[in-house]
Structure formats: structure tokens, C-alpha cells
Length: 531
Image (tube, rainbow, N blue to C red; front, side, top):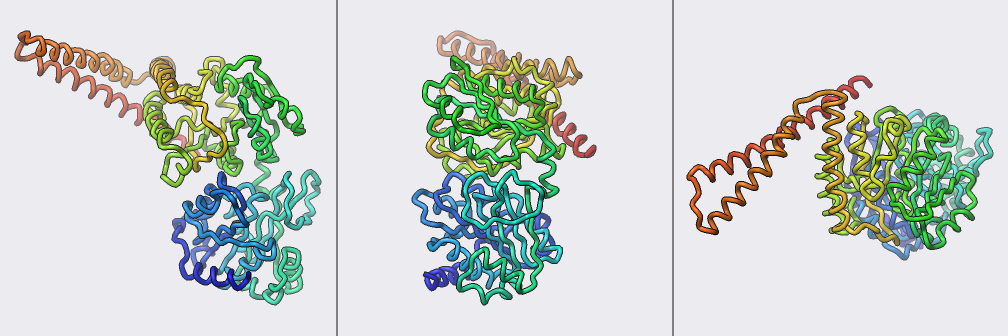
């Protein structure tokens, strides 16, 4: 087996992947040395793409060690830019690959994704190596059972079992303990490091300073659920331990969703049932109200159909904790790779709604408005009339409109689409017919509140003139066409008049959009300067 692994690695090492971060994003040490990340995986097609893309933003190459997946894990990992190596033989086989890769890399990191839920912390993981340590071993509080050795850390906490989530080592240090590689396990590797006198850093994310921000922030997660008996348990199991409250809103389910939630056995869960189906927006708003009552500082939304990857949750939360945003949301539409798993029809619908929502909300930098994976600050929730939010699937579009009217900062967080066994409940024909008028009404409300009540800007006049002149120009054109078909005479100036009114309408609307963009851009620049 090991000889086959060696042949696979020799060909792999001679042809590394070409995903490299910009120099400004990499620590000084990484600018001078090749850096490889290894990620063991088994049947993780819904999450491996996210992990590979994030790891690739730090490393020179990413290897996915596939432990016998029967789904599309290997295919998705390859689409993300990783090299996939099939392995069998458990921990010893993984560490054998780890050793062989160290022969060609100055720095190697082995990540156990089930025990390290946020791969985006790689830069933090590698910090000890920049400061002179030879080996960096870290843990993550896990509720699920991990086969890795327990890291004995004297942190004074016994809340969670701490399992090894990553292992980072310099190539020179790995060679010093190479004599132990014939039967290498995590336990023997750490023992060998001690014998060789290596400087080992034990990092616990449960007490590390970067996570004290999470400890001091009360975080709630709203889980809207409607007939999700197949996926609700997976959704709740994936919610990280640092979340303080989980608000499950059962929106009139007729299956066993409520029964499963009640028997789940997590003390953080607050269960609320709607006797009749009120819509996903109404469920989320009720969750927001419960979170405000419990004085949560940040409230995220993770749908009960397990579409929201828990790996991405810190990326939504930290911009709010750090004061860079009041509302964060996922964006799946940046690249084709990120849209893997999303149907062309859903992708087209999202692009169209993105454009409509940009105009309606005034957030011209925001895309994928239908992405329900969001986080919002308590301050933002306090300024919104929650009872006025649209109760159905268009709630997220309506929420953006209201946030913009009151000057809240919104940030897109790029992430891949994640679709598995769930089925979308959105019927796009009916959806667009219902949501488009709501966005238009919200657009008019935003102009009135933001640019006439709270402040004044002449762009409302441009929008008003454009919305009057454009339909008048269209009517003039249709009337002229009808007269031509009926062979009735028209004044010679009539076609010119029609084009003039139509052109003026388009021009006024474009001026209104331009001024709206400039207002948002200047506000963002002021906020950035103040920070």
C-alpha cells in the first residue's frame, strides 16, 4: 500500500496545483517556502469544496486524502483545485502521506475537518511556527466523536472534549523524527517530538485570544424549518458549540420535524411552533424577536434543510464582531466553481433578482440576495420594524431595503453553493410575480424615508421624472405603431417626440441610479476612514 502511495505522491509532487494567494495575504515565512495542506475526507461532497477553496487561498497546494468516499467528494475536491489521493489504512496511512509530502515541502499542515470547523483560521494556526516553534498542534471543541488523540491542555475547562484538529510542522522538524515513521501515529509523533527536544506549541481554540471575542459575544442561530424531518437533525448537529441559543421555528410542519427537535437533547434549543404555515420570513422574524428578548448580540440564520455550511459561520460573524458590518450574507454567484451544485435555472433566477434588488435596496455591491445564510447585529435589528418585513421567501430582499434606508452596513461573504438531499421549495414563476412588486414598493418607501424624511437628495427627482417619462415614452411609441398599422396619418414630429420622451426617461433613471451608487460609496468610504 505504501509503495503505491509513494508512486502517487511522486507524480503529484512533480505537478503541484497552481492556486497561490497574493503575497500580501501570506505570512512572511510562507513567502519563502512551499506550503502544503492535507485534508482527510470521506463522503463530504456538500462541504469539501468550501474547505478546499479556503485552504487554497493560503497554501501553494492542497491535497485531499480520500478515505473511501462513495459520493462526489473526490470530484468536488478536484473542481476546487485540489489533488485527490485515495488512501486506506486509517491514521497510520494518513501520517505516512504526511511524512512523504514533507520531503518536498518546507511546511505541511494536516487538518482534520470534522474537528476543526473553520479552516479559515489557518493563518492563526501557523503563527507559532513563525515565532520559532517546530510543531503546532491544536484542538477544537467537538461534540461528535473523533478518532484523534485527545490533546491534554491545562485550560481549566472541562466543557468539551478536545481532539486534535490540526498538525502543522516544518520539514526540518519532520526529518528529525523520521526514524519513527514506520509506525507513525499522532501519539507516537508527539512523543518523538518531545524526545527530539522540538519546540511544540499546543493551541486550544477554546481559550485562545482570537476566540475570546466569541466567548464574550452572545450568538444566536435561527433555524426556520418546514417539513424537514430528514435533515433537521443534521442541521442541529452541525451548529458549533460557541453558539449560545438555537431558535428552531417550526412553521406548521406536518411531518416529524417538531418531534425530532424536541427529542434532540440540546439545552441551547428554543422551540417555537406555528400552528399554520406563515412563510419562511415570518419564521425568521419570530426567531429574531426571541433573540432580541434573550439579548443576543449577533443572530445568524441557518435553514433547517442543512444548506448552510457551519464551516462558514465564523466568516459571517467576525465582520460584525470587529465592527466592519451590521449585516453579513452569503454570496454563491462569484464564480462557476462556487456555483457547483446549483442548477442553471436557480443561478439565472438569482442573477436576475440580484439586479432587481440592487436597484430596490441601494446596495449596489451586493449579489445573491436570495442567499438565506446571514448574520445580523442586535443594533440593526433594533432599528427595523420587524413586523413590517415580508413574511415569505422575499423577506431577505425586503430586509436589505429596510437596512439601507437606515444606513446599515452590509457585507457579502463569498462561499460555495451547498446542495445535497434537500429540494428547493421556491417556484420561481410565482416567486418573481410576488416579489417584484414588493421590491418596487420597498424601493419607493426607501426613497421617501432615506432621501426625503431622514435626509434630502435630488436623486428622488431624477427617479420620479424617469418613472413618469419612461412609461409615457413607451405609450407614445405603442400609440404611434398602432396608428401606422391602421394607416392613420401622424404628425412628422411624432416619432421624434416619442424617442425624446423615452430617452429622457431612461436618462433620468440612470442619473438616479448613479447618484444612489455615489451616496452608498461615500458612506462606505466615511465608515472605512472612521475605522
